[in-house]
Image (tube, rainbow, N blue to C red; front, side, top):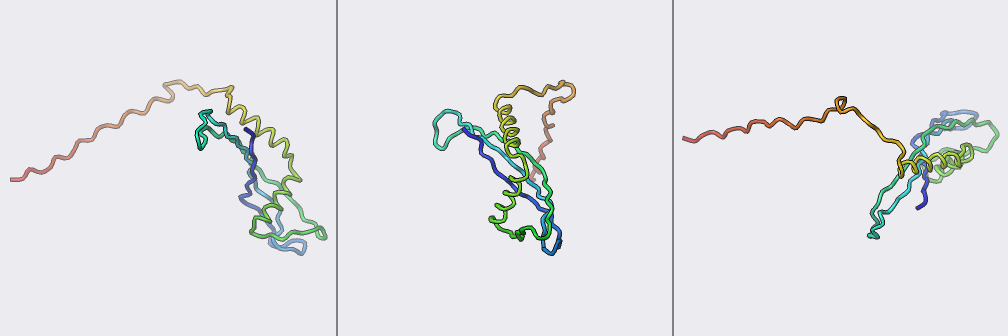
Length: 139
């Protein structure tokens, strides 16, 4: 299956007023996630399998210069698409996708594992049974 990529813009920082404009965005916080569903091969409907994913998190700064085209902030999906175009124009998306794909490949076929000393992580003891209350005896 192919990796599907998705942008998430959880926050933007903006100057209340700058260069004669309002809500001038100067930092975009982003998450760029790639995910790949791998079916288990059983042919069931809906398919059963595992989804592997990896996320790149970052911020990107912007500077508005008076006289350049300005897109006013709007709490809409259309404005989100504008911000995503900014990100895609200023970040190395191909390198981000390659990094995400590499991480997913390692998740699918691990090359490392975590090992522990048993005395460093002792098993959790079973709970101690609590005495049950005895019901009062009726006379």
